[in-house]
Length: 283
Image (cartoon, rainbow, N blue to C red; front, side, top):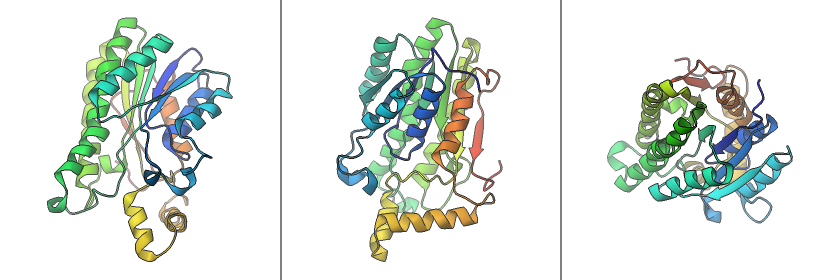
């Protein structure tokens, strides 16, 4: 894979200890990129057990790891449900680095409270998923693209979608609808930005061993009277056994594809949505 030396990448949703955002940050840093990483300042109750306490400090911990590769990594907390904070995020990265070459829209709403039949889905929860999973991506592109266009050097935008972008499931109306919408946004933005040599693609992971808190998983663990870590371990084993390639997807699997799409090796790939799932979904 070609070097990203001299490139500046902005990655949202990068604070999870086992998350796709962290894996992507470390991969891009290893390839030579300078980074700006962001996440929402979550309360302890919204963190998985292994991220609670002082041992893990979210994007600050990720930045410390990324800097070991010898490149700059700045951290910016941002509430992606607020347009003004997304605009300020883009402006701050431009102020610090002078440019954005690569935009990785990776953040997503926490799954769980949405996992009800559509007629029971709270309207506020529906809007929350729209805000984080779709509107925030639109706004990040809206505010970053003019800077990319003005520089005239092209650019790369990669959106983290899901297998739920291609296959609906019961009790997943909010999540799946926003992820389906994300593929539409990816294709439209790809055509809008193609004249400026800015590519826009999506990655569509299946079940990933991220350990990011899911309210649904916490509720199931509570119902079974077992720790969340125990339930998660059982779930990872079950999903791995059901996967044609014999294991669950890891964050690094997704990060490797994001890195390729972010590189100069992918100049003629745009508007695409690539699965990373071990063979559980083909289209």
